[in-house]
Image 1: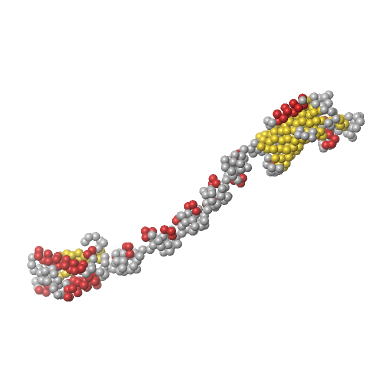
Image 2: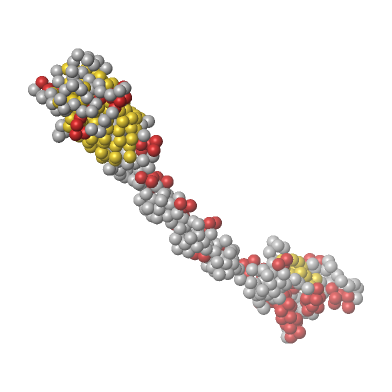
Length: 483
């Protein structure tokens, strides 16, 4: 019972720390297995210190004491930069105790004698600082290490402290499970030569080691400390962050996280290959221009085909993308052409210029319009006057935007007042006759000058005849304002 209590104390102490290789992902590890105690190192045989203590290290059958059951347990804590610390508790039964006695029967060539001391139990409690070379050699499987530490050994009824340099190697089957092999030279710092069992020993261990303690909140196999997205499952190549659409761009940086896309477009697709992400493309199924939000412009008029009423013919936006009509082909669009069916220069708003020949013709025709004497009525039955009015109408309608002034004049017979009234009435009569024949009222005005503007002498009958006249003058465009 006394020995069992010692083992329980050792195990309880071990549960606090450890000396085996872990990492910062799984800072804790527990190890257990079997241990072997070799008492040969302190027998005293040999020709020098190293020969006495370190010769015949693998004489397993002759010198090793192995308890065929679970005989050690340890708990480890990784502290960083390849170092770990901890405690290990172990138990063994010594049935091969090596002493140097060359005179004793059965001694070997070195004078060593192996005896069975009977019910001799071994208990050890050891603290260790260990350095792992695994990161240095960049291996995920092989994990060599060196250690140093100290402990306390119970050897039968004796107990004493030890200093424990050691070495080991672990073979990791997975990131968290491995096979651990280790050896320590446990130098008895308080050995008493008069006490048979106060001596240094080699302790060898072989067992399993399990790492634990790493936190992985989202369960993606990446520990929280290394997980850039610890609350959502992700991929190792993205430091634990998800890539829902599998396009190689983490969701946090993916403008379209649910749809496979292109890195150049922040993870968004471009169905038509025009370099504009579908989410920003007003025409995602047909290649287009960035300036038109991804829509094509077949006629190059700056209006997207989908909004262009004439997608194959260039035209201005204000006309829905269609060219303005120019019925008379004079280069002036119908909408701006005062004479859309008559050819004319842009300088005259698409209407023909009034020629000198036309003005001369108007002069001749107007002066040949005759009135009843002293009245504003045309001579009854005068077919020539009607023909003259028809000819004037024909000339005027060739100039749809021209403004003409129909002016009446008289000779000097009669009063000024009477002559003024008569000239005004005769001018109005001509204008009305032309309007009845289809000339636009907007193109005409009438005016009387009485006897104020004679063209010949009123002293002769011939002169008076010339002064009684009607004239038609071109005075500009009807769009120049009220004249």
